[in-house]
Image (cartoon, rainbow, N blue to C red; front, side, top):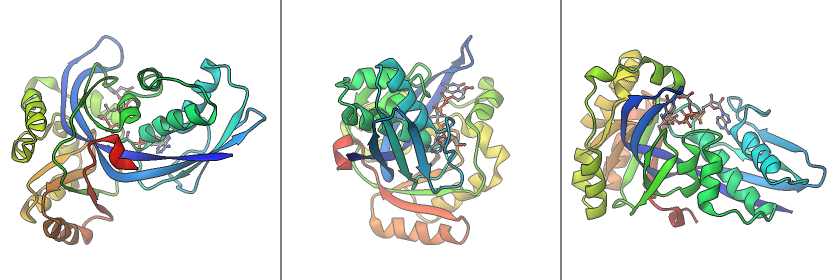
Length: 289
Ligand SMILES: C[C@@](CO)(OP(=O)(O)O)[C@H](O)COP(=O)(O)OP(=O)(O)OC[C@H]1O[C@@H](n2ccc(N)nc2=O)[C@H](O)[C@@H]1O
Ligand SMILES: Nc1ncnc2c1ncn2[C@@H]1O[C@H](COP(=O)(O)OP(=O)(O)O)[C@@H](O)[C@H]1O
């Protein structure tokens, strides 16, 4: 018996860091949404209790470091499950990109095994469990549009923003999230207008959304990765309505309403950057099916 799940990438429309906490985390406030670039996971039931992960992507670990493995192990232990699973990950989302690929795989595993192992766990509980794996996993359980608080695990869902095209460009170098948070100097950052973003989404105001994109982590990643800055510039010059780095980077996304413009941006970036994608903004989990 097997089932499958889609694990879409997220982008941060706003990412604000409020303060450094006394644990190893930062208090954040982020508006996040989902885009139509997704990994596909297949779950095959095993009766011997073993958990294995298979992926052909050389950047994805196949052992207990894999976030999908950790999700399966967590469920097994917490709910005393005696059955096991073989997990196949067909990777489409670039790794260490600021698009939450690993977190989305973990969330898809929680959703998938909830069905495969007949656990009957409510979505809110799955989201809480996800936060034990990583801060972004809670959002990825919903795959919608939401404001995330705390260290990212407190999710309040929002209506989907007006749909548009999203051009994603990832420079070859990856970025390690912990080191970005570590280097963040909060004294001089420009904080995004989170409330304005939420209001714009609620009004369905595409222009308002474009005007309010903002990410304080750019203040760390941009100076360390000049290519990110160059991609932002190129996207703007090629006609993107708004441009921002996602998460801790280094992926840059550009928003556009016209498909023709999206194609133009894609073509202007292809020679410059190996991984470029044109996808739709999904904004709600039902858009995944
Ligand atoms: C920055 C964001 C924005 O969406 O995305 P990515 O760039 O990773 O996609 C996330 O907050 C990343 O979430 P995630 O990748 O799950 O991070 P975690 O595994 O929980 O944390 C990795 C490390 O980042 C730092 N960290 C993370 C979240 C947070 N609110 N404060 C932090 O200081 C901590 O040092 C932590 O040990
Ligand atoms: N299923 C997975 N897919 C991708 N990366 C994973 C996975 N499991 C663990 N990882 C590890 O997590 C790290 C961060 O990957 P990813 O989630 O893609 O980045 P980000 O947090 O920037 O969005 C990678 O360096 C990778 O080794």
